[in-house]
Image (cartoon, rainbow over all chains, first blue to last red):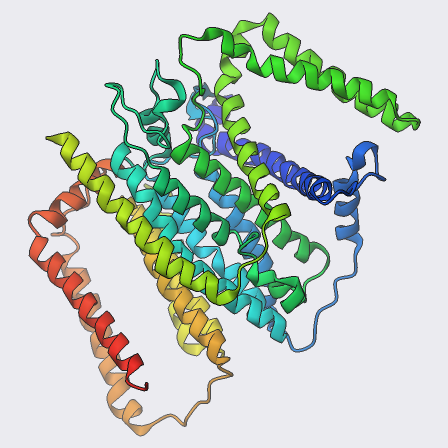
Length: 410
Length: 166
């Protein structure tokens, strides 16, 4: 027992890392399902619906397929870089989640004080940026090592794009930093807490306690565009533009190595959504004023109807599997929703995490939504947009915010 | 204390191995990768000394921005394996003794000064970041601005050089 408490500083983070990686990989897998479903419905298709009810087991089937697929090694590849690239991409993408605080609570396990999130660093935003700054190597090395002209072009495009948009990404956050006066993501969220104003206190609206507001909406605009470019998603997915470059930097990758790039992309989407939530949308703070305690039943109000719908939907299925799995999931959802009403202590505890996850999933949905609606940029448009529009606007935001902060001081 | 010492030696070994590999590698991109390892190891050393801000900036600026440009240029030129010339006579007679002398000099300097150097005070990252910025913009504002000016001149020079062709 004493050994446990002695090494609690080692054991507790390792357990938390294992839990977080498990959750994130599951969310990644189901994000592919959500993406395929949503894009399919935007395009008037069904999307995956053969494997399990609503195609819900498709991610599992894909995972099994990835593991058992043949993994050929192309001729004349640079072996070190070729094998290093997917590991680097996945490792850095997962590591960047370590500094994200998912909820407000702090608790003590085995005499070791910790919170919801792996590490609570004072300069967490800088740590996050330093990890994402290295993320480009995964893509660049993959493109270079594959000994394939399409891969090389994809890698080159991605490096150029990431260099260009990283500036705008970093500068767009400076406004928030100036307002909050801290590099700690936890403190940035706590700075946006504004009891009687609710969502108006978030940085996107920026009302302070005395009722004067200074919005960071320009900062958010720059941040979100640059973030989409950083994660190589539509409309900035030129590194893997399939009509021009086959599949871009991961053309020569198959099996699990390809899956690693895929997981890395989805994980960085999650990280960016968490970051947008924390910096501009109040993190775990509820959008309602603190006095509206009845809004604490929102999680139950969402979970119970969802669970009931899933139960009734499962009845439509003629397969035994659909009839068992869907009603089972539905019953669990209803039970959780009802349990939250019955136990107010638990309900209070999950409020922060609930709002955090709700906002993150909204951003993830917007990612998918954009993929379904927007066309791709041309390469020169991408570059001139980044350098001639996004960068000046984010610098202007820094100057403007500094002026306002200075004016408020006096 | 011993834990910190172990981490120090791991990071130091990583930095030394990375530096040697940087010179020995024949493929330019492997050299660039070795340099990135050195940068990250150095950032780890800064972190060990309690300079969190400097460590993060080291990775963002050197590991992220500058080395990405290196890798980008190497990829763009598609530079092949580097060709080695024969070991030059100048290196044998002047280079090796000089290198040994410099190494001995630095080692002697470190051995003599280690006792007198004050150990860095362990401080919170926020305070260290704040103190750093206060120092930069008060006591060291002229060197700081001068450095920025120097960088600006270098940028302008690069643009002039690049545009001379047209």
